[in-house]
Amino acid sequence: MRRRFRVVWHAVKFEWPLKLLALVGATVIWFNVRNIEDPLVVQSLSLAVRPTNVPAGAEFLDASPSEVVVVLRGRRSGIERAKRSMAAYVDLSGQRVGSHDLPVQLAGRPKGVQVVDISQERVRVRLDASAEAERPVSVHTPGLPADGCELGRAWADPPAVHVAGPASAVERVARAVAVLDVSGLSSTTTREVKVQPRDGSGLPVSGVRVEPGVVRVTVPVQRVTARALPVWPDVTSPPAGYQVVHVTVRPATVLVTGPRKLLATAQAVSTTRVDISALRDTRSYAVRLVPPQGLTVVGATSAVVKVTVAVLSPDRPADTGGAVSQPDAVAPGHGGPQEEERVPLESSPPGRDQTTPPQSGMSPDRD
Image (cartoon, rainbow, N blue to C red; front, side, top):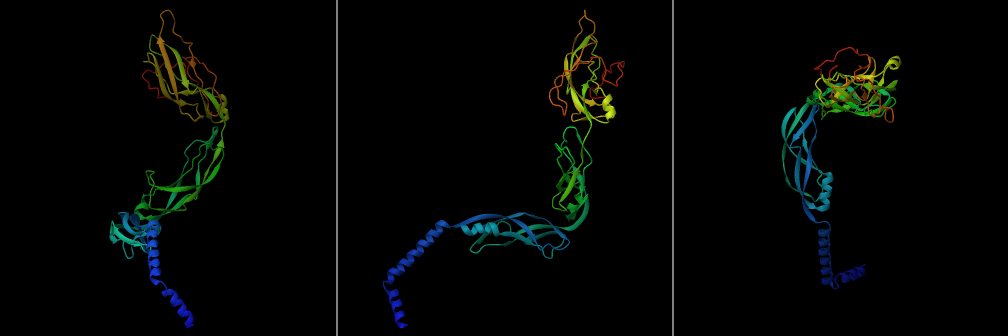
C-alpha cells in the first residue's frame, strides 16, 4: 500500500510546474470558449402582472400598469430559460373589493440570473365583487342559403348559458351570441358554435366566463316552390311634347316564391312608380321591387330602371306602342341570359289600373 502511494506521489511531483501550468492554461481556454459560446449578457424582459391568492367572492379586474419590464444579467442560456420561466405577480391575500397599491413580486428566476432593475416595483390593482347570471343565447345567421331555399327559425341547445365574473362586467352582458354562416346551405344543418357574450348594443364583453362556451345551433333549411317572373317597371307619362323612346330594367327577371296557386297566376313583378314627368333626356332610377301579394322575391329587392325620352316630332303622333326593353339578365337559380322581353310603354303592370293618370311629383321610391 505504501509502495503504491509513493509511486502516485512521485508521479504527481514529477515535473509538477509543467502540470500546473497546463491546468491553468486549460482552465483559461475553457473560460474563453464558454464566454464565446455562452457569454454574459444584459437583457430586458417584459412580464405581464398576474394575480395570485384572489380572495373568495372577489374578481381581479386589472393592474395598472399591466406589465413590468425587468433587466436581467446572466449567461445567455440562463436568460433564455428566464424568458420561459419567470413571472410577475401580485399577492391579493386578505385584500377587499376596491383599489390597492401592491408590490410586484418575481418568480421563476433561474439560478445564475440576476435582476438588475425593474420598471415598476408597485402597481395599482382593482378588485370587484363576483357575480353570476343566466343569459339567453341569440343565434345570428349571416349569409344567404342556396337558390330556391329558405331558412326557418334557428335555435340553440342549450337556449341559455351561465355567465360569471366581475359584477360590473356581468351586468353589461345582455345575451350570448352564436354566429353561424348559412351561405350556400341547402338542407337543415346542426353545428357546434362558440358563443360570445355581448352587451345591449351588440358589442363584445370581455372579462367574463361563459359556461358552456359552445352550443349546438340548428338551422332549418327547406326548398321552396319558386318561379322566375319578368320585372315590369311602373313608369308615368313623359312631359308634354316628349315621348318615351327606350326603357330598360335590370334585373329583367327575378325569382319569386310562395303558394303554388299564386305562382301559377302571377304574370310579373312590378316596381315602385318611376316619375318621369320632368325628364328631358335619359336617367336611371333605383326602385324597389313590388311582387304580387302573397309572393316573395328571392335575392334582389330592388331594380334599376333606365328611361330615355325625346322631343315629339310635330308630324308624328305620340308613340304609345313603344316597348320596355329588358336586357340580358339572369334570374337567381336560372343559368344563362334571359330573352329580351318587350311590353307596351304606357301599359301598367298586372294589378294596376291602366286608366290611372300619371302622378306627377311622386318620388320613384314611393309606391
